[in-house]
Length: 361
Image (cartoon, rainbow, N blue to C red; front, side, top):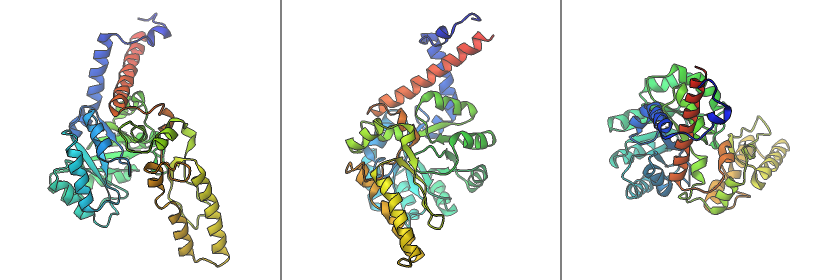
């Protein structure tokens, strides 16, 4: 095959090539699929107001792993959502709990009572007591590791798997890109499965991380605009017409008044947030507000803004959280089609990889 041309390299896969590539892909994903109990090592990112029964069950039914976003839910409300999700799928799914929730211990018990097999602890370093309770109750614990040192600490604390999420992701993000996190963490962690997240929008990109040692990937933005997502049609259309550069993190004007970095689409609300910060800072400097009052005023600007965008469809004034992979959302698609596309892209990438290897002897 030394005389194979570039055109040949990109030719559609033969059935034999496709079968070999699919076997290779399944092998790369095996640790992830065995951990999750799914056909594909693809998790749905937990997104407030979006990751509820409809989207979660659709992801699980399509062979992925749906994750309920508990967010600020009370224990009774979470129990209802778990039951409603289970009524829509008999496939595995998980629940994402925020570690800062004042009723975290009760929420863990709700998950255990409902037989949830995987509990994802997010939003900070999970308390040892919560990890212990979940594991003793028979659940597997997944946690987020934004650095190698924390990844090692979490493993010592007993977590069963890790997610490393890059700054390309939507919503609340850290400062480091997935490409750097993957290089920092994947070569050094093999005790537990590690799932990559942040900016993932194609299956061929997922393959590259699997070959670095990842066990699977987590996607949020692609699924937020899925047909089964309850997000408002205006919210989904905003995704379809946006490019990667439209999803930026919130801007902080003054280091004295920290702003939690949140990635979302630029709109009138984000522009007004800058003006609001400037106004509050001026009022603080004039003595009209104390530092504490000014900080609260800035933080309260986005109160309820995510719901306004997702549920009410106010994409101009609400918070349209989206990752940089939003540029790869070309249409509103059913979840099964999205997952099928991801797998097909992965298979084609592996076929071309093998062809290049054969071509080079």
